[in-house]
Amino acid sequence: MVAKYMLRRLGKKNAKRRKWRDRGNGMQYIIGFVIALFIALTGVGAGTITVPVLVLFLNVPAPVAVAIGLMFSAAIKLILVPSQILRRNVAWRTLGFMLLGGAPGVLVGSLLLRRLVIRCIAGQPPICPGVQCFFEGRFPVMANFQIMTKPMGPICNLDCTYCYYLEKENLYGEQKNFRMKDELLESYIRQYIQSQSAATVSFAWQGGEPTLLGVPFFERVIQLQAKYCGDKRIENAFQTNGTLLDDQWGEFLARNSFLIGISIDGPAEIHDAYRVDKGGRPTHARVLRGLEVLKRHKVEFNTLTVVNQKTSYQPLEIYRYLKSIGSRFMQFIPIVEEVAAAPDSSGLRLLKPYAPSRTTVSEWSVEPLQYGVFLQTIFDEWVRADVGRTFVNLFDVALESWMGMDQSLCVFAKTCGSALVMEHNGDLYSCDHFVYPDNKLGNILERPLAALAGLPKQVRFGNAKQAALPSYCIECDVRFACNGECPKHRFLKTPSGEPGLNYLCAGYKHFFHYIDPYMQFMANELKHERAPANVMAWARNRQA
Image (tube, rainbow, N blue to C red; front, side, top):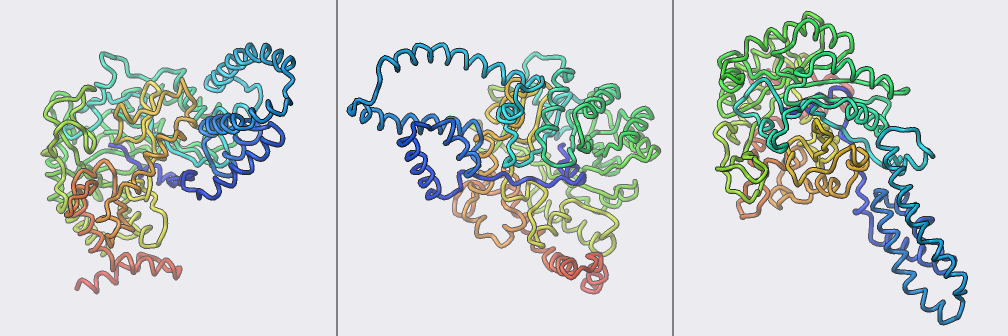
């Protein structure tokens, strides 16, 4: 399970990518008029005027700007050329020699262009820093993005019943070796650091199970990060099931200040219901041994707990247990999956909304309203006794909503698309929950990472989170806190028959309505520079 909260704990906020398509048509019309006027007067067009104007004033991605510039300039010149011929302004002999030279010039330019791109991808010294910035898409107007890296792909030593990522192995056919190669690792680390404008760059390593790679792999990660970081600060986090952690791991993680997410669903009888190894054996005792390693070496950790059909009915047992084992930062992730009767052409059975195959909700998926009750029950105890001592990511993000802030967790943000996933071979996908063939953006060894992250396809994916909301959601009184939640869960129809309603809608409505007075109180305390923990006494009196 992907712990997006870990990136937020490291100080990362979901970047808002500027939406150049939303700029007014009037601005685009004025730019078109001015450029056409310059082309008519000077003959100068696509490269010199159009592309820089599109990039700087409309924030159009560089590759798209080039294509628009060429097409626009060609269309305008088709109108202008006949008038120049009629006026007999063309020196045909000079034009002929220029065309003879132009043909090989185009060929040489195309070959040079390919070489420049290869140099950028390979990390070789740029012929010109400006050229490298152009091909890598590193313009000041481009927002930061985050990558969740799968250096071991979907390979794991456990066989959790509800895991949505294990079957992604089928996307790679008969491939047996999923270990990320060193040349790809180096290219990724270099490209990712260069793509980030912030002073701190956060890496998130997930899976599958990243500890299968061993400590030497991550020692190499640290070496490469030091090689390319310059004056930037590097932070690392990874999500693990904890079963392979030992003192060698503990010493390495402590020495390099890794933040670790431990997957644990509660006490043994709850955890072992679904979280078993390849032989079907329970794993809870092994997870606790791994957790003790982290504590012994003073490695910072948080816990990730999957809320499924069974665990959703035991909220306090789980919450109190997590506190008892020392968890101060908790994530509660709802599991919701649509299952097809047979695998699709890619070998996948867990499909995304509105897939062609007929699907049913899996038996392990949490029930919508019960998820809301689960959260409410934990919130009741937390708001009376644990505010400021125990941190639950969903409660933190809810307070952001009531404060009128942009939500830092992508599922509750208005738009998404800035948290991508890279597989072991360099394939880049739109999101951890959308690792499907038609959500593949490309490979970072074939096209620069920053360029792939800024593709119009990815911009459309992120903007669709808001644009595709049904009117039922748009008019909802808790939309400000929910924003339709994750698009992966939007496979129901509204009461009026409109598609796109989130499966968990009933649960979120229940929860957000319940916490409203408490959130209003805490938001008011913060606005007056008082501690939100004051809500505990207020809540105890209110519930007395």
